[in-house]
Amino acid sequence: MATNVEEQSTVSRPFSSYQAIVVGAGCAGATVARELAERGGRDVLVLERRNHLAGNAYDRLDEAGVLIHQYGPHIFHTSNQRVFDYLSRFTGWNGYQHEVLADVFGTYLPVPFNKYSLRAAFGPERGEALIGKLIARFGDGAKVSISDLRKESDPDLNEVAEYVWENVFLHYTTKQWGKSAEEIDVSVTARVPVFISEDCRYFTDPYQGLPAEGYTAMFERILDHPQITVRTGVDARAVLEFSEDGQVLVDGVPYQGTVIYTGPLDELFGYRFGRLPYRSLDFVFETLPVDQFQPRGTINYTVSEDFTRITEFKHLTRQDVPGQTTIVREYSKDYDPELGMDPYYPEVNEAAQSMHSAYVALAGRLGSFEVLGRLAEYRYYNMDATVANALTLADRLLEDAK
Ligand code: FAD
Ligand code: UDP
Image 1: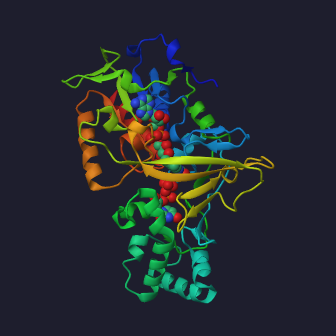
Image 2: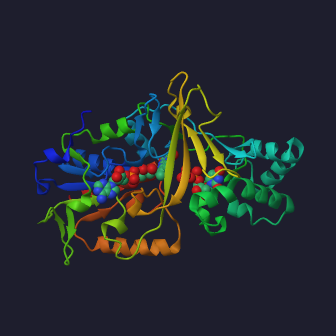
Image 3: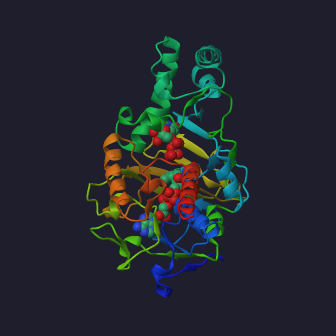
């Protein structure tokens, strides 16, 4: 790897000699670091507490030689031309189009629930009649959130809504979020609308796929720049301090550059306004002596099992490993930082948003301190949104410096 990655023990150059310090080497941190170095000509130090780059998109070969995603399956998809063009500088794409099936008492139904799902669930004749009703109400090709569909008074549409709610959303959402599905913000389930279509893809963005050599390789290239230094195995909290008058101190010395922080804000500020609720996950990997375990990349267990979904990586990566395959089961749980868990999903609710706003206000009182990424911004972002925000932040910082 050509990236300038230093072990903590070999560090010599003082923090104050870098014009920017980026905390976190995930999508957000890597992108903004590259932009500040390349377009801004700044010396950038990236601090990452894990022993690897790429944040939650990190992938690696397992013992069987199968390329796995250590922190859960990641499929890149975007409609954002700038983001796609930007990342395409650092990688080719493998063209994978993600498809998901729901296992409903042993029957596989495409998710998002679509025309095929309707025919399979209600039989060809009744399914066709219901498709006709959906088209008449919403238009062919429409995407309708389950919460909107459930508001329909027409008995047929209502029957579809209740079927989909019961068999696709209710149990899965309860497992994933650890509370009653009715309590979950409607924006969460709206990510997976009912799709009046025969398109079985999970995402319909024009750009979709996995980096041809994997995410870690792509992030290594993004961070491979002569003005970027990456220090892994360093928790930024060990070097960052904030004085009463809003000064940022790095290693005890007032810092004149910009700090860009992509970790959880509650943790950074000692939980002084309370803990932000996140969901965490246990990933249980299994390698099996077969070519293929399941017919699609992901099967969602929407009415049974304790885990939410099983993903088989070879579908996603298109890797050819004869006679072996690796799958991962995801078990969702409440996040507890004291038990060494990782925060994966910010919970979308008003109380959490207002606590987060208090942390953002605190960060806003610090000189030249920026909050970026899924954890720090406490938003349910996909990778493309995270990269887009990092590019926008870099635009602003470089513009301000003119
Ligand atoms: P992260 O990837 O979390 O990176 C933050 C980094 O900061 C981490 O490496 C962390 O170790 C480091 N860090 C935090 N605090 C400190 C500290 N104090 N000191 C030093 N380092 C620190 N998106 C998609 O587009 N498609 C998908 O299919 C998809 N699937 C997903 C599946 C799962 C299970 C999860 C959890 C997320 C998924 N996402 C997906 C979302 C995607 O992971 C995020 O959008 C993206 O990783 C956000 O990048 P980030 O840089 O903000 O955060
Ligand atoms: N969801 C569901 N059943 C499914 C798929 C999704 O109930 O088969 C709900 C669930 O609440 C989930 C949300 O829709 O958290 C968003 O799903 P998505 O696939 O976007 O979640 P992610 O990939 O981020 O885990």
